[in-house]
Length: 258
Image (cartoon, rainbow, N blue to C red; front, side):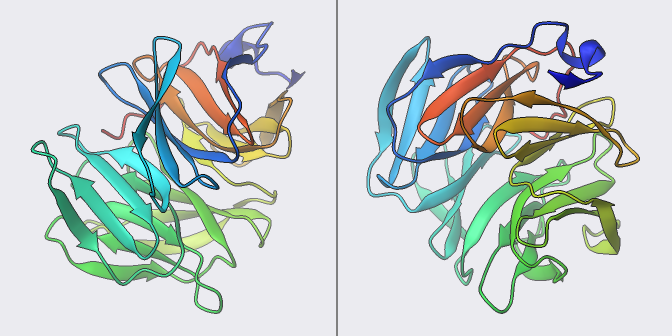
């Protein structure tokens, strides 16, 4: 551990490898039913990890981002679409004119924000609660992770190639305003905790920034993380890192978005 993160992760935050042997992991999301889903993107599979065992959930999937909505329905972005899996198993297409979607986050008002790294025209999209699909930002060079502040009044976006994290004010209709650079860093996945700290997947580490954008420290990892999610009732971190999944025990609760 580097930096003062003891109030967040204690004094011995050694990451625990809970699964391995994959080709390229990303897009983890932890269900309220106590299982982890993630993508093995090179193998084009969505995997499920539950009680220490890994199984195949879906083959031939272009998925690059996963999350849930408030009803526990799985939201997926990948290929050129964003979809929702209904309780019946039916797939509902939420957006079908995307280009290179990377990640998505569900907001409590029913909006979904998606980062799309289309070459030449990168954007952050919003799917409104009424189903309208619209661009809400063009600032990022290569938008990757997206995350909401604990009060859901701000959106954070990782600009991987631009080497910065952006932050926006969220207006009443879900539009974004006042985009500014929150921190200068090369990062991929993003999450926030209830204290307003911003957690970021960086080279061989999960870094933590306070609400002002000051770097508090980092938790080293054996592999480069692509993304991570809050699990175990939004209390611990589960990290997708190259060929493996790691767990980091924390002392803080993550922001609940579903």
